[in-house]
Image (cartoon, rainbow, N blue to C red; front, top):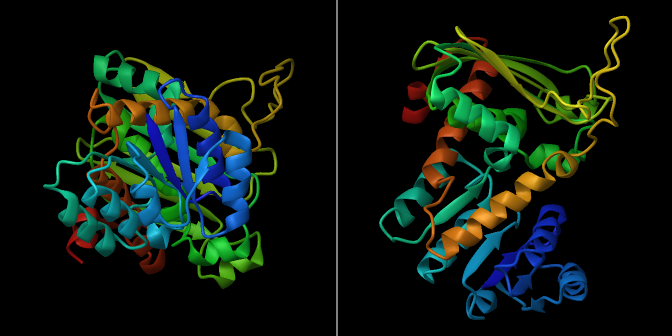
Length: 334
């Protein structure tokens, strides 16, 4: 099949490399406002370069991958749908939840599949965790802990436009908690602090946060996030039930150091970047998209899924600012 890529920044170039290695993909068509980025992709992957999204959609593509800036996501999703071309779009659907809801309304009855990029759904550890929960082998759940710690913050300009740590970083934890447990979040309470990079505080954001999520069956989920984790990129989940407990990310590249005597675990070089930690997951995610394009499966992560994680992020943002518990229904109706 022939896949178009819109946006060739860090993640777009990474997707181009991944797609170029998939058996199902015969050719790539790319476009980016920066001509040098498109030229580099053409040289590396033998991609065809066009000068606009319109030209890309007219180039006979079977599916498109939207990796452009967030502000461009709604228009590019809608353009793909109007052309009848399946769309893969990196999260979020839109810069604000209101815009995201409008996109959903516009595409809901069009019959064109849309997949939103939440790669943890394709990581083997998280897949196995979901299977353990759904099989019942853990018994009734009582506690979930989900962690995302970045080794260093992104640039100041990125932070200023990110929408905040809950919408940019924690949202991955919110999505994977929903997916692994099969439950919905009903209420949140969030806290945050600033003990690191000054530009994060200046942007009105927190660099370290914690959130307590209450799920609709009474399970408690604890989410921990930080922009500062000098030992590496740390993504983990613990799931505790009345019959058993399991962990995702408990492996030799875990960026933790044990101070227990005689303990040598973890023994590997810590993960230091999200692309390192989730290389295989990204490949599985885009493989799944080629199956969506081929009509072999439905979207594994819909716009509705992405919006649900977004509502949790909005609730946590409000909770942090107002120092109080916030229900999901409160922000959904706002």
